[in-house]
Length: 387
Ligand SMILES: *Cc1c(COP(=O)(O)O)cnc(C)c1O
Image (cartoon, rainbow, N blue to C red; front, side, top):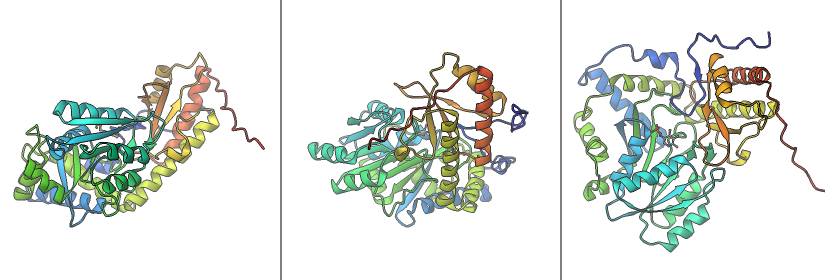
């Protein structure tokens, strides 16, 4: 039967989204008990998680991991407030919604800033960053999103980091949807702070984010004490946990226990290389399968990160995103609407505890759904090769 769903629809759905995303059963099971905040086992988990994050970042001996309650944006705001001095100036590189969110944070916390913007289907250009830094000596820090999850575009982190370092400025990285699956080795890429969260490529549950910080930059930030917020004060959070082994406020015990488990699964999969390889395979199967169905991708393959893929919606008048979404949801797959300001699109994620087989199942559900909706896709014109 062509339309039999590959997954049992009574199972929990697979989240093919940029977050929250699918976690393993064992990660969920790690939460089936309560810990006291001063429980020795729980305190050991905190220490283990923090040192493991530093290790994954390639920052052993030079960097610190600071955990912060909340979603990823909480850590981004903590970093802007903590690291950019009140008399500093932030250059924000924007090619999607997450870059725009950094600008909003800079406005709210009252830091001088300027922006460089690119279209949402285009990667950040390191040469333009170099020119902007040369033209404005007041800029002290640069903020860049590594993988812009809005579209899935991969920004050239190593190249931008080199330009920022050569100009003697500081780099703050939003690596939310990349850390743990894409390379960002602290020994090769100079930054003051890099932000990510538990429920992206590291496949923990949502609720805690973190910043990997260069210790010297942290100590400098501790001297200028610019932060605007008590709960987002990364220096206080760092020092308190160093001193006591505990959290400043009520500890997110279950989230930490699940993350401890998620990190051992990440190591078992072969760390950044192993996790990245699975996501690349997911992405490849997804893009090939969708193109075979007649869908076009927003991005050219060279700038596509293996994290989330944006597809153009079909032009057939029978296309209806809500109906498409509901049909896939009934079959056990949750996708995501587009977040672009211009093109009409939807997105399918490659990250989380999902395999190539899951992606093939989703493709089958998409094919069936299109047939049911009576939507016909006109294949994108084949590239013409002039002799
Ligand atoms: C997920 C994500 C964030 C954080 O968003 P929250 O909604 O706060 O979790 C920030 N930047 C990027 C690039 C992301 O993918």
